[in-house]
Amino acid sequence: MAERKKINLALQGGGAHGAFTWGVLDRLLQEPELEIAGLSGTSAGAMNGAAVKSGLIKGGPDLARELLDWLWGEIGAIDNDALMEFMRLWAPPTAAISHMIEHSPGFQFADLLSRMSSPYFAGSLHYNPLEKIVKELYCETLCSTQGPDFSIGATNVRTGKIKVFREGDITIDAILASACLPTLYQAIEIDDPETGRTEAYWDGGYTGNPALFPLFEPHLPDDIVIVNINPLHREALPVTPQQIQNRINEISFNSSLLRELRAINFVKELLADGRLAPGTMKNVLIHMIADDDLMNDLSVATKMVPTPLVIHDMHAAGIRAADRFLRGDIDNVGQRDSIDLHEMFS
View 1 (tube, rainbow, N blue to C red):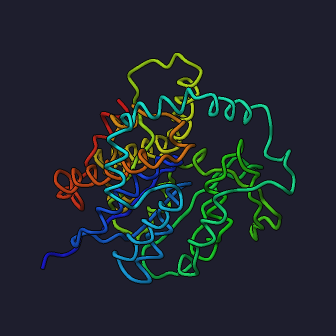
View 2 (view 1 turned 90 degrees about the horizontal axis):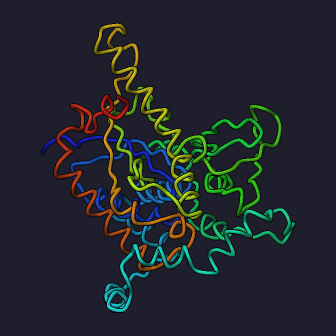
View 3 (view 1 turned 135 degrees about the vertical axis):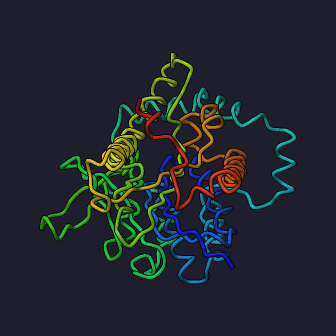
């Protein structure tokens, strides 16, 4: 039997578009030649990662897949293929659904309200709908050193720096902090033993979407597979208010990832030119699973409004994207990058 290929997974956040990552994980967990050694997740990526780590420790890949199914069922997925096919007969394509939600009076009013009000106006009546889901998803195994390494990224409101929660630091509040959009939810406050004060946290996507550096640890494999759900490239110029805001959101949530990829590329060039001695720094190998064509057809509306048909299509697209990776790039694992970082930054 061939030795299993060990990989680290870096899971982006992106609201309900995280269902794409669900599909990717669903497929990778069925691959016997792969072993997930490390996970770094932000926002929806943190929730996906929590389901995977918990499932792998408590029951293996099958239980991890079951927990992912449960998670997305809570968010809005429908686990009934016959019903989904019936709905598909009467529903428009995914891109049209996104367009309809984005331009609906209800969504536009809610979007305007989020820019004119604050979640703090509700005071003690403020409600975070993710809290119930995260409380049911959370278990003590997330703090365990067993199974894959697991890191969650959040943004420290006071300092503007990334906060990485690992092992014993991973709590219900840490997961909620990673997914805390400041226009929708009150900041998550967590006691920090390092500073001796209570720190407030917002969504980790602003400072690390996802953070790659926790996966540079010497005991982890060199290969990082990034599951990217925010398109890096959009050919069309955004012209409507919604399009402009959506692209600002994508650029903002990709900027930290691009900075880390640029740093990785710089280290690679130093190693290749002999300006850095081999072994001085880790030669990280980067792979990416994405579907930018699909994501370019969608918008922030389908991130914010979980829609069963869109979630279903995202999940299916994630499975297809993972299949493409397994057919085309799996042989690169342990050998070389699957994306050309030099070309990306030239």
